[in-house]
Length: 211
Image (cartoon, rainbow, N blue to C red; front, side):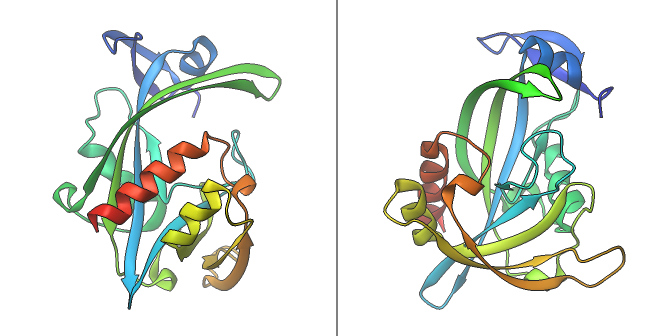
């Protein structure tokens, strides 16, 4: 929402005060976000889950993305940002169950609805081992159109460029109050939110190494 308030920072992450979401992205203020990637084992395979952003999102609509992620609102701590998992996926866990994967900075610019958009984010990235079946997830209709899982090593190869596509099984919203639909998708790297692919490879490698 345009009137949502964020804590904003300078290049050295010194606090500058607060600004609305719109002001933050119009002026390119640094702000903080929470990323969490869900993973599980299936025999000798390790799988990782990712979401499909809703078509109505103002940025990167209908792109594959981090399993759950969001901005920290003004005054919110990274521990409190775990709410994103429950809001977007219906997954309730404690902060202590998360696996720290590092902190990254992203500086992206472009246009949204014809207006300049500067997104400068400092993101704390986590993993979570989650055995909940995909069909039991509770997707937030305003944010998430589907959730999928694919082989973790194959996804790393996808972003390294040695695979052109990977097969993913997932669930998608099929209508209000309707059960989730089980689907199979062929997924390419260019269908993900456009980031430097090193973000995806480094995070997925860290997730593989710690689980």
